[in-house]
Length: 231
Picture (cartoon, rainbow, N blue to C red):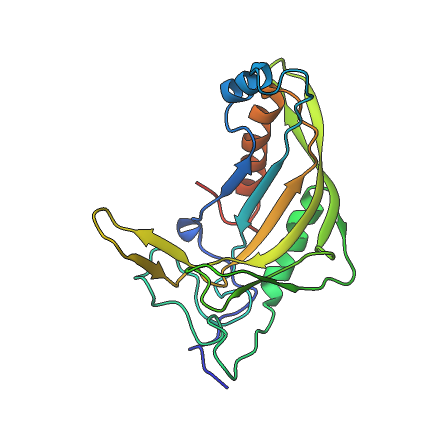
């Protein structure tokens, strides 16, 4: 069996000064003005615009979701991965209990239902930042489902946005394209870092709605120790 260095406690939390991470908010509309412009664009006139968000947040474990490799922020490239992270022959992933606990904690914070039996699947695709050829994620059985997030609109009123699902997955590596260089560098530190993906219902028809959702999610993420504050 491959060794991944000294074990890390699954229950350990990052110190507040180390609590940094990256949030990816992939949405059809990024700003209020862009949302309003999209609604009045000739390309969508006559259609109903509905907006939903897919948000990724990193869980604050000191070790990765399927290995004992560390997750410390700012380490030198390619110093925080191990044979398990790369799926080398003879290795098997082992679930990080602390990652599961943090995902459930976030689900409870948004009033979601916790799935009694949660199953992981392989999402197969080829890309330079995924050397093992697949990502371990959750498909049909997410760890949480049917929650909600309350947002405050510009006029002071509140609106409840449904959250369809929260599922756990591992992060991929980081591809770096240096200026003037014809080669792509791959940094492996982020591979197998634990993430949750938060998928909202597509129920935001206006720029005001879509503008209010990201800061509400951001503030919730920052208020919990379960996930790393996002920037």
